[in-house]
Length: 121
Length: 110
Image 1 (tube, rainbow over the protein chains, first blue to last red):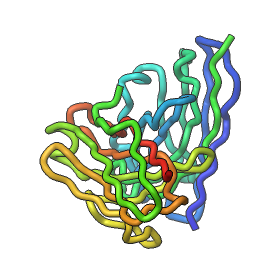
Image 2 (tube, each protein chain N blue to C red; image 1 turned 60 degrees about the vertical axis):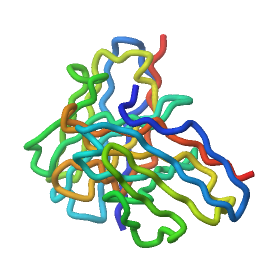
Image 3 (tube, rainbow over the protein chains, first blue to last red; image 1 turned 45 degrees about the vertical axis):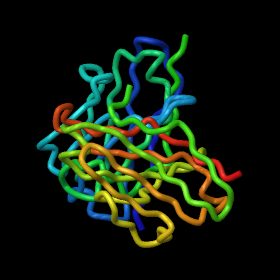
């Protein structure tokens, strides 16, 4: 059974940094693209970033480009999101999600429970 | 601001059918597959429809999807109370080189 568990969320001041992690199990992690998706309070789902199976292709939403960095460690079955220069509008529940394919398609067949990030002074 | 537009809400009585529309453009829906997600607040989203109209195992056949041109739709027939949730369309956008979700539709069972 596929299992995704996010960690690393918390309260951070504007301008600060956080590193989110996603531990994967139950599937061959290095065969699939992975994504981060977030939901801000009272708003809808927003795609944040993706990384293909061998990290050959990486993409970001315009709202986080230049501030967030996605990476993966296939040896550790882990996905990461380094978030710098955080803004109040980055406050959200951040989900790690598995793509159905090795390339990024946004066909997300498994999701973690999410980790909450709050950016506030 | 999403590039995929959905109605904010739809509602129906138990047993009725509802349709949720998703309007996009040439670089997303017209060119790429559309997927639909059901999100019950407090839980993780789950894929309901993939590749425009295919259902994963375990999803009731009351849910169906279709796509035409730059638009897609999700139909729910025989509404049940457990269908109350938020529904999102999603597609890859070649212009943005990224994924895009719809604005989301809240389904209420009266």
